[in-house]
Image 1 (tube, helix red, strand yellow):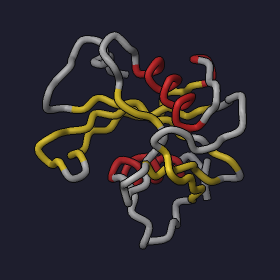
Image 2 (cartoon, helix red, strand yellow; image 1 turned 30 degrees about the vertical axis):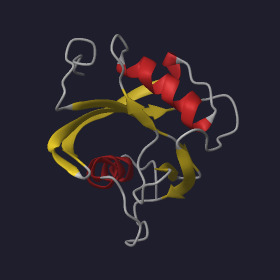
Image 3 (cartoon, helix red, strand yellow; image 1 turned 135 degrees about the vertical axis):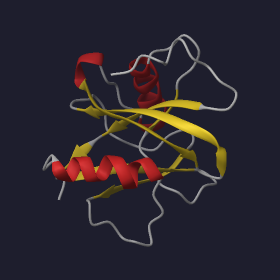
Length: 145
């Protein structure tokens, strides 16, 4: 695991953490307001935050759930050009969310929630890290259909 989140801040690169929530062998994706693309829940790591602290904060803000650090399991780290901003690179640490308190519901910047498996609707626009890194890993780990 790489620990760049506290030591590196950049005007060009974007540092994020994301959570994978699985129910009934499907993964949760979210669509922010005013966007057509679905992504993993999570968000930017703020100055002084760890990836885990950022993810816990973002899950509470976006999905109205409470997660403890012990409920998060590191899954992978990925890097990809930012959607619509190819001059910027998104560096994302992705964690499995193994437990939470509360009922998942969209809040703040989240307009819509969906549950998908590896054979999702090809007309559904997914963020590149979710589509090309996270979903194939979840399928290979036999966590989703």
